Image (cartoon, rainbow, N blue to C red; front, side, top):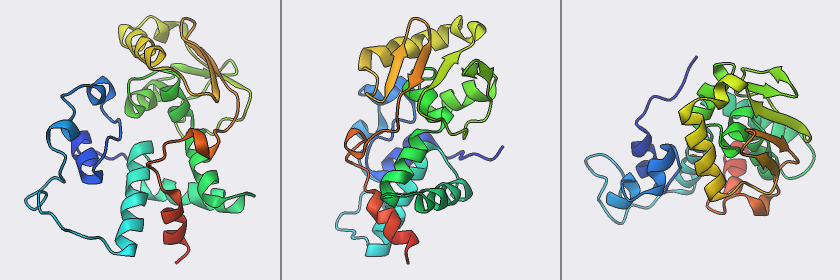
Length: 209
């Protein structure tokens, strides 16, 4: 299975903001952005660098890809589906990415990070409507019930991730019972409920060239 093996903290520094790729470390002062808020590499501390319009669009696409942990080919397919659907393409894109099983598993606290939640899914530890699903890109529908298997609930790592997620609070579009490690995907999130640091319109402009 192809995946991005670049160091997680380096990816955050490249984008200049926290992408929350390293579980609980991202919520502490050990986060790389807190200590070195400049881009990695020999020329990372140079100031005054300005990106062209195309550069800004490309940077935004890369940031979204890194946040959701999808490769270029996957991202293009998701964008094509978002463009095909009715409504605003940018909002559809984010909704489809948020509707992925690995993303929902992360939001529900089944893993400390999206990468960890993806691994939980791949290891047959997640049930969707009572059936095992081990495809991280599986698209959920409103009303789907997602839960950890009994064996997975017993793992200390899963318990810690669930407790941490419950402490931070769950998104409005999910109904989660942390004690039962179970939740309902109520609806696709509205744009106002998603991070304002994402500018999906730049991605739409990039693919509209």
